[in-house]
Image 1 (tube, rainbow, N blue to C red):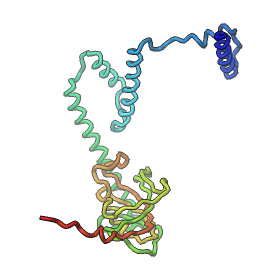
Image 2 (image 1 turned 120 degrees about the horizontal axis):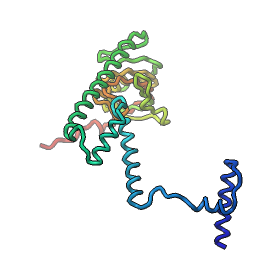
Image 3 (image 1 turned 120 degrees about the vertical axis):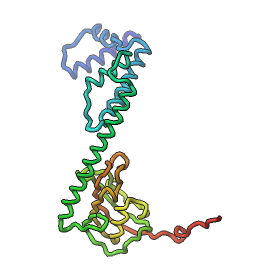
Image 4 (image 1 turned 45 degrees about the horizontal axis):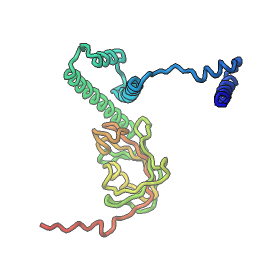
Length: 257
């Protein structure tokens, strides 16, 4: 009985495969043999572990290599040195020399990228302020009034509710409350300077576009892996509401000396 069941299963698999590939039918014996007989790729647990370890490390390493400055490297030389170290063969650099070189190389590459991003932002702002619709504050913040509301204007200590979208000057979107489907609330003096200044220019019901120089944004360090160092930022901001701080929030705790 067991043999009949196994044979039926084997025949079902073969018929399904044949229907897809439209190959000539094979005998029952051939079908059963093809389903049962497999050539193992890995013959023991150590082989399987070794292969899995290579896949795991290789996958992570491949992702990390994509984050190199410019994403460029010589794959042949990389694999050559990697293999030589694993085999214990002689290499052209000691590990100490390699670390020192990498530190120097990456520092220079990061500085180059930062300077390019800084120059890109400065060029953008220079061109942008030629637009008659653009207004510029003393700090260097630029803005365009899209819609002027008729409500109140917030103070720096107020909590505001806004909808917003943020992009880099190349159009890359890095954040959006519109995409999340709900506005956010925050105290105005607890965000970047460009927001603190820009939103205070607005009245409830207003919608502005803010062009924030890096000095008024996330500075030389960038933020969150999505905002590069020295990045000029563009925000479309809609002021929905103002919530003045409660009286208890304004009372400082008693200092006991």
